[in-house]
Amino acid sequence: MAELLGIGCSHGPIILTPPENWHRSRERIFSRNPNFQAPPQLIKELGDDNGLTQDIIDQQKVVEAFQVMRDRLHEWNPDVVMVIGDDQAENFQQDNLPPFCLYTGDEVDGYPFRRAGGKDNIWEAETETRFTFRCPKDFSRDMRNSLIRDGIDMASSSKLNGWDWGLAHAIINPLVYLDPEGKFPLLPLFVNCYGEEAGPDYPPRPTAKRCYEVGQSIRRFLDTRDERVAVVASSSWSHSFLAHKNNCSAIDLETDRRYLELVRQGQGSQLATLTPEELQDSGDHEILNWIIALGILGDVPAEIVDVRESHTQLAFRVAALWG
Ligand SMILES: [Fe+2]
Image 1 (cartoon, rainbow, N blue to C red):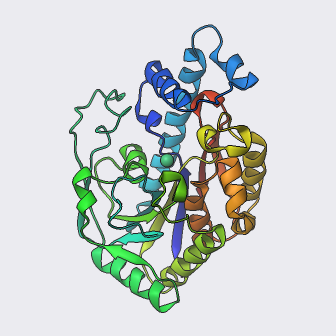
Image 2: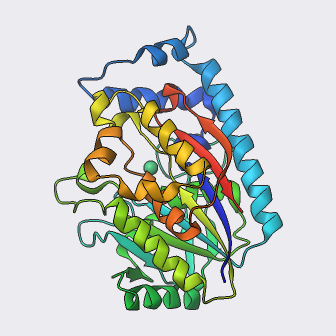
Image 3: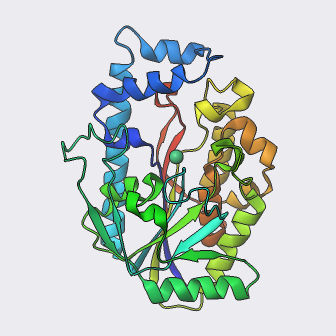
């Protein structure tokens, strides 16, 4: 039987950035949308200091939540940390766009501060700062083989052209908090959460149902193994700039609060029924990472460490633990 620890967290680049600079990302993203209409709650949060007071509160809460999750992870001392995150045209380019891909190499690097927003990081680290992780090559190959024999056509890569960039931000950003020294072997799983939203040549994102099935198949494999695995779902939920029903201007709070209750109560399998249209409308593209994790962990209640609902953050951020 698998011994599992679940962690759910955000990977938004602003988690690395001093709150004094959050307004820059916000303004950049708002300016991309010619139909942007500021929702009333956003106007309230911006107040008379362009959101700085709210940003300081939110940043502090995000950091505190990561501290709780980091402590639990290190106390638990896993054999493998599996991070499930989406690629946003970083490691995967037009030459190769799989719905899912497991990393099967033996080492991997990340450069979290190379990305816009990461340069002004709260540690004042150099842009080229490198984080190196050992990877459980044999374990990940066994997992891939098990998935394929179980009917899940999992892609794998031990070398990609896109690796020159370093790990996609969805994988590396949470690790800056959770395991910056690379203490634990890292197993990245990439998911094409953005689908057509990333460009006309991108295939559609996999369905919620398929993501849940991938998680269940991973669990069947883990149940045959002795390794203790921490499963990290890396993503925020509704993004304001992806929430089509809100004119790509506001987070879909109502929908995400509903999903949060399901996760809290151990009914996450219900998220497997979400349709592609529902995900597209509410801007919950990235929740697919969590749905895979929920398929692995099963219907067990989550301990909700923190929830950030501010429109100033551009995304609904949940920090959670299972086990
Ligand atoms: Fe993201």
